[in-house]
Image (tube, rainbow, N blue to C red; front, top):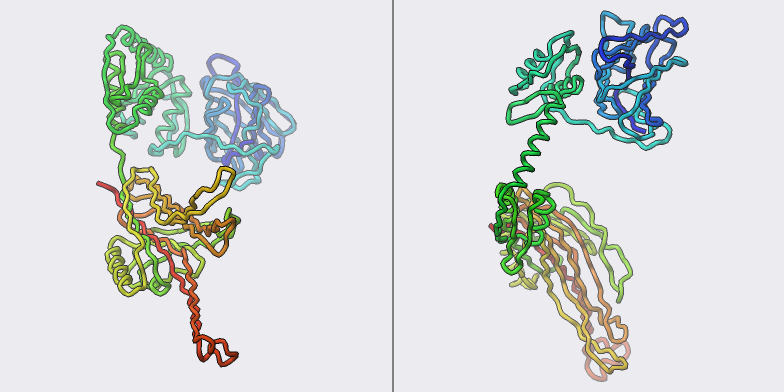
Length: 577
């Protein structure tokens, strides 16, 4: 079931090839005024059926001004809520226009534009007029239901439990016009549209006939399409010139052009050219040309992988198209330089580095092979990248939380100075500062850590294997058309826990986070919340005296030190120019 927000109305009887035919059907004695309450359009057994329901009996008149234009007058009836024009372009109906005429307030008029001429059979029963005609499309489903009870501009409830469907509509952008003509020469109407649109309109001498139509607040390009459809005409556009001619004539011209083109392709000399491919994948380029379907029936294309070239043999005039396609696609892929800083700092220093945190991630414990925690569930970061001024007034968040923040390019130098100062005071240590260059949409991997050896015993003997305990950074950058960088970032921190082993293999505590961020060229993304805990126990005592109960504390010393440091990852992408 398709729901339409605007009034929808009906279709007409064609009883003669030309001229005006009136059909009158008299129901029971009608009351003074009837009102339209429902209009529906359904496809049943290859037929389009339009139903018009009213509050009381009525009389109707159906007539046509041309094969593509029908009008239904409901005497003693008002339109009610149905006042707006609807563009349909489906089921044989182009559009439907309710017309309100102040001179005849007791007549509800519906103008219907058809996509093809149709013979319409009217059936009147129980205050309902049904118009049935052969549908050029074949689908037995209800198309539209409109009821007066639904407020104008709101979706109507579904009928018959069929899914709601959207009617595709062509978008028109021309200046809106209102026209009201009766028996006017078609060429005069096209001249008016030319004056409004700014296009030059050339009308074929084969275009003849009188024009009768009333349109209000309709884009001029939509009005032109309606007129062309109504009179079996078509248009072709070249630059700022619109040429109008009967559809059959334009179709014949297009066929003639296609025949001439085909003849030229068949009779033209075959020319072989070699196209070196400098940057793109040569096989992918060949497939692109094949998919474009521009090779003639005599054309042939192949790849020479040794020279990374494409060989094309085709008629001479086709090589201009190949030159354009290859020149447009064979361009160097932009590159992104990624500078990373992996820093280990104290809690206090984290609050002084000038990072404004924009998102937080709470660890979600999950079962991992070998034990440990996996951080998951990245919170959304809303808003634009944050330009941060030092010193910072915002902390890095609570323990066990991974934060995401931004540092502007202007503040990056100050960050470097602070990190250098932190190393001299022992509050921080730069673990590594790797740099890597990768192409647009290609993965860059930075790994810092160690491999822990362990021995395994099997029937083949004893052998040494290794388990990774490393901080791994994976970045996939994409340069947007605006010059910003969209980065997919994945951080993994694996650390061995020798206090928990299985078959002499230490468990691996795992923290992972994956996010997608948009950042300006040269700004820095900060990732924090990866904590490292160091526990130190130091016991010393005077021999014998330290073992004396109670008094032994005077001769021994016990030091328990718990130190927590945070690992911060700073990622600075720059577009290589």
